[in-house]
Each structure stands twice: as structure tokens, then as C-alpha cells.
Image 1 (cartoon, rainbow, N blue to C red):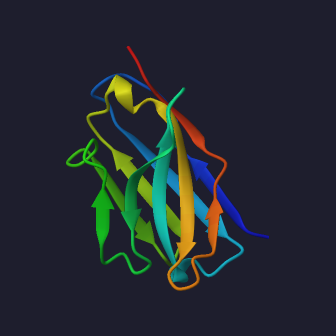
Image 2 (cartoon, rainbow, N blue to C red; image 1 turned 45 degrees about the vertical axis):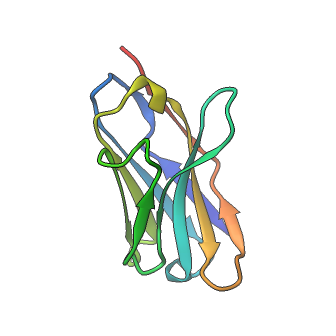
Image 3 (spheres, rainbow, N blue to C red; image 1 turned 120 degrees about the horizontal axis):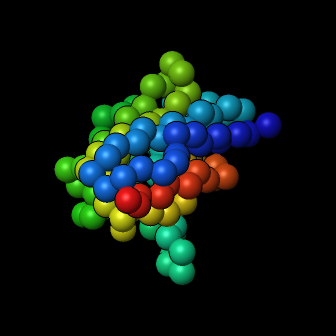
Length: 118
């Protein structure tokens, strides 16, 4: 049974930090590129950050460059998103996404809420 379970969301003040985690199970994690997406109320889901299956390459949305860092631990089947200097406009549900490096088979997590507010 495939599972992507996000954790680490919550309420944080502007300028604060959070670290999201996504624990994967039920598939060969090291064969999947991993991404974080987010969806704010009334907006479309957007790509935040992506990391290749080996962790050798990453890319980010312009809105989070220099503030967010994606990383992964293939031994723990987990991908992370370190979020610093958070802004109210970062408020959204954050989703973990896995895509096979060859076949394109993909999976979504259930999401975790991040709220940035004073």
C-alpha cells in the first residue's frame, strides 16, 4: 500500500521557520523524484520545490528561492522541506508528490496545513 504522509505543518509567525517531512512507504523511494506543491485558498496548486531521485539536483519556485530548501534521505524514505523567513503569502496546504523517474507513475500525499500569521 503506497503512502505519502506529510507532517510538520502548523501555525507560525511571519519570519519564522518550519520543517515539513514526508514519509514514503509502499514503493521504491529511491526511484522517484520528489516534489512539494502547495495550494492556497482560491488558488491553483503550484510547484514549490523538486528534488531528483538521487538528490543530485533541485529546483525551486521563484517565490521561495533563498528561503526554502528541499532535501531527501533515501535511507529513511523521507523528503523534507525546510522553510525559513516565512511570509503570510506562504499560507497554504503543502502536498508531497512522488513521480517515477522513468515511467512517470505518481502519488500524492494528503497534505499538511501551513499558516503564517501574527
